[in-house]
Amino acid sequence: MGSRKRRIAVTVGEGYVPGLDRVFSGVVRAAFELGWEVVGIRDGFNGLLFPDRYGTDGLVPLSLEMAAKPGLFPPGILSTSHPLDPFRVRVVDGENAISEKDLSEPLLNRIETNGIDGIITVLGPHELGMAWKLAQKGAPLVCIPKAIENDVAGTSLSFGFNSALAYGVDTLERARTAAETLGKIAVVEVLGTHAGWLALQGGIAVMADAVLMPEIPYHLDSVAERLQRTVQTGCPASLVVAAEGAAPTAGEPGLSEDHNHTVNRSGLVAESVALGLQRRMDRETFPLVLGQLMRGGNPTAVDLQLAVGYGAAAVRAIQENRSGVMTAFHPPDLTVVPLADAVNRFRTVSLDSEFIQAARLLGICLGD
Image 1 (cartoon, rainbow, N blue to C red):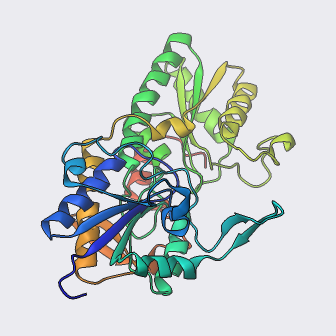
Image 2: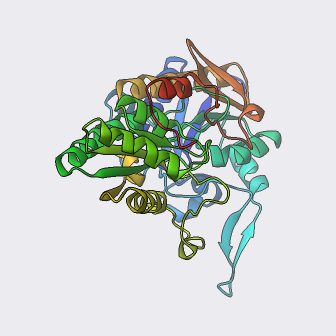
């Protein structure tokens, strides 16, 4: 390398989370303190693989000025809507036939020819396996976990979760007010395909009557019995929080057959649970679906500091010539862990979790 200034690149996987620009700010600020250059890769890895698609270059210089003021990163520089897997890149041939090709080797070559000494990529749990394979092939890769559902294994807290939780709690409070005003049962579906962190922690925060989550198959009879006790205490309104991955216990009717082949499952749990409770209790229910709305809004202070801290930690890992690792928060430490600790698994709620015990002590029905 000689006296050449070190050059690192940043990119991001699919899915926006509030405060994403602060991750880049942390990377840029830390890198500039070391005298390094930082570039952003356009549209996942497309900026490296297909630079001819862009007016000048698929790499965009990220300046200290951009990092100084949150929100200055222009939209579109680092898109969150493009697939990031170089092992399965969709290409179109001369006859307009679409196929998938493994372009990992060309990507590694482009990394070298562009003088990139390290890549920092912000990924969700579904993309970490790809990152691990790329690192195994020699890519100088450091990952930062982002996950609205907090389901990335290897870390106690993924960037983006706290902001989604804050938005969810605010909306759950509004749903409870609406239920009390109308004297109905509100069933609110939140994100959580594999893990019930949002449903559980949000439900505890607002003192919900029931929380349904993927980790615990539910019995609607048990939920109805709990809600009926609420009515007997003189409160006509009830609040049920359900993760979109929650499912009934074996043998209990769940989603209708028409829904089994639906690609987009958003809202189906809220609809099924609301209908099932209405039939059992002869009380009016109304389902609400937060879904992808939880990705919007302003980032919380927790996520802002986590984003900057993760960015700086990733730069430090590159400084130490580490690759195939992921930044992680294990209170009170901000550290890095091997990517192998995070791939092919999800961080789910343990049945002996302190949050589970707290919910049960508060009388919150978990459906079992």
